[in-house]
Image 1 (cartoon, helix red, strand yellow):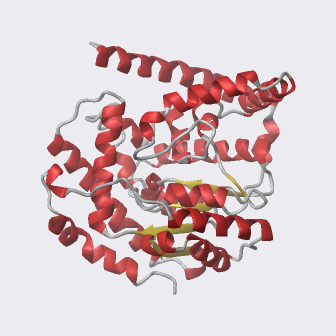
Image 2 (cartoon, helix red, strand yellow; image 1 turned 45 degrees about the horizontal axis):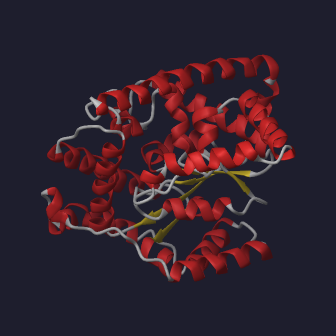
Length: 357
């Protein structure tokens, strides 16, 4: 009974928030029509597969606010419109002038709400997040499978570029592009938009078509680590949302997802000019994040400011004492590490050939 009640609350909130968001998005065209004129500079897309330290990397790059700007979770779920963003910023400024009591209350509430995410994916409404989540507003995000594990509606997202329904693809990409324009209109016109989402991988060709000159960053990790961590994360999210799942079904769906994440990006990257993408190893990122980020900046010709250089050094020092709490026990899921290695090693080796020296 408790599970049904909690899931009902989630669904009702989702429906209510989406309805309000769409109303405000429509009002943008009346009160802020100039957002459509915002020019999007070639974005940087982090499109690596899940469980490859991309959240960490995204947060580090997003800290370089002189160059980059990214959507935060509150923006995607509660304020995709210009009208909502400006209203929330005004309320935030008013609260600061009055002592910041509401802000402290919200941040304490935020910590309680997202404490269950911390073991696998630390989250906060106030942090940058996978910007594919903005597509929740048009029911086109793969994260929905954690609410509805048998939902076939979103399966096409795993083969987005190959989908024959051109109108549907255009509707999704047009909505996403307008959301970026709205973000830049409020938070950083003239900056480079920074995106991170593993679920962008199946739409890499479409993104490059809709955002000419866009850049792509891919971190590759050993299959047995990435896949087992991905299965564990999927089960954790199902538990968080009180979604019942069949273990074999969960493993099967997760493996199908990684089949796409391993096979498709490498095919695409091999066709593109080397200056448009950068491939690096997860292990190298963990060993020395400062060095790897500097290599990324050098490759894409982004300047490294003195302040950001100091920040990178501090992140490297912190990372040296970090120990992951994840354990990769394949027997828990009825699949062996050897099976995973055999299944994905041919693709992994192809990425090895694309890694920048």
